[in-house]
Length: 71
Image 1 (cartoon, rainbow, N blue to C red):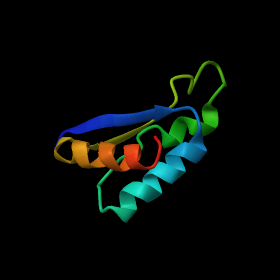
Image 2 (spheres, rainbow, N blue to C red):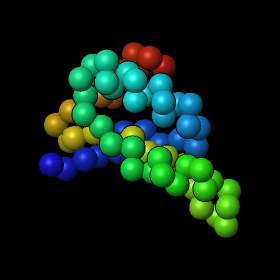
Image 3 (cartoon, helix red, strand yellow):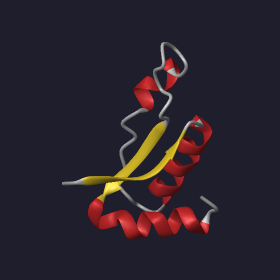
Image 4 (spheres, helix red, strand yellow):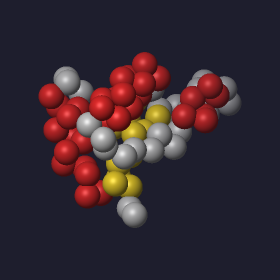
């Protein structure tokens, strides 16, 4: 299954909100950068932020959810 990035941010609070929204709508997701979040700012790690990825076939649905909630 191919996952695509639908959101990127440096704010962990936004990631938490988006994860909850996707769970509420039964949309599968991955947050592959969560492990490096605590390293943000150390030796240049984490400067690209954290991503939310969803399966390619759920991309449109996920983007619609994000847009409906102001993301």
